[in-house]
Amino acid sequence: MQSNSNDPFELMHMIELRRDLHAHPELGFEETRTSQIVADQLAEVGIEVHRGLGKTGVIGTLRVGTGTRAIALRADMDALAMPELAERDYASKTPNTMHACGHDGHTVMLLAAARHLARERNFSGTVHFIFQPAEEGRGGAKAMIDDGFFERFPVDAVYGLHNMPGLAPDEMAVVAGPQLASSDSWEVTFRGIGTHGAKPHLGRDAVTAAGQFLLALHTIVARRVDPLQPAVVSACAIESGDFRALNVIPDTVRIGGTARAYSAAVRDQLEAEIGQLAQGTAAMFGITADYKFLRRIPPVINDADATRRALAAAQAVTGRPVVTDFPPSTAGDDFAFFGAAVPGAYVWLGNGPAVDGALHHNSRYDFNDEAIATGARFWSTLVQQELR
Ligand SMILES: [Zn+2]
Ligand SMILES: [Zn+2]
Image 1 (cartoon, rainbow, N blue to C red):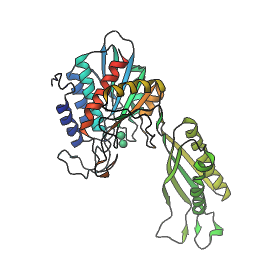
Image 2 (image 1 turned 135 degrees about the vertical axis):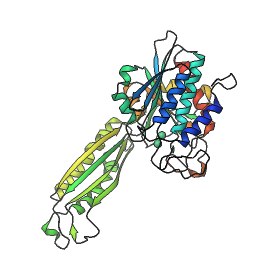
Image 3 (image 1 turned 90 degrees about the vertical axis):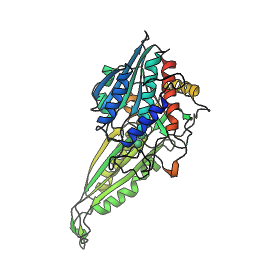
Image 4 (image 1 turned 180 degrees about the vertical axis):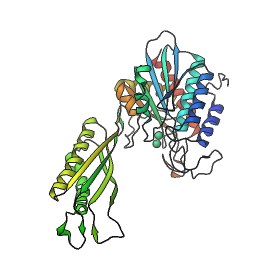
């Protein structure tokens, strides 16, 4: 696959490849086909390929000149376990698996930039192209880091990018500070003493305790967290009793949910407050509570210096002013694990208007191929500017 000066990013090839990936989505840690394609596309232009980090992860390394600075650019490769309901000729051929977050586009844009840079070799330093598995809640970034990413590929900075409907495909948003929230899970099990529904005084009612707990849960954000600090606490699952036994007060009630914050301090506070409320409520009702807080993903907080560099690259490639006041999202991205280890910046690239109202994780969502050129140009310009 050759490129020429009119088509430095092999756009036709990349659109074809993007649609091929879209038609063959793979779930986290199962990206065997995708990672093989990525490895082949990198090797074809002479990029050093490392495989097996985080099972299906791929690292492409490109060293040019004598520059000692090294940076990493990260794309995610995985799809979601959901059906694709839109009719398009490249719709998913795999049942209940779909690229509904645009990671097919992320993969292709980073490939396009890597191949361009490998041909042009117009920088001095080292770039590691990270093709990460399992971003969608399966822990791909952490798995790559646990497999020694930072020891094997030391870097001075790391960058990530996500598509964003609502911004134009030649529009980017680059903002310093918090971008994405921490995403943690919690679980409380209230343990009372089950009894006859007609004789509540002979037991200890965990169901009523759970009701009190659920109402009080929302006082954590309203009354305990600094009002100027965003936070979310939601109960999302509840399990107790049996609808075939409506005369039985059950022994236990299990409640689970999510907690989100944009700073380490508020994240710690949510963990402590939910537990304290569970224990306090249990004590009030003379029962006990088990509490678990599972730390999944830290917040994505853009480093000021890395953000300035990303902004300069975005300003050089987009056809319009870069958005610098884009609001943070309460979603999470495990890019946070890379960005927590070295200075990092996570930027947004427009995906055009939401077609039929479909946003990320909607069964009709699709990455916009018109954004490939902007994304590929952004990545390659960032490398050329960072590694002069
Ligand atoms: Zn997603
Ligand atoms: Zn995503």
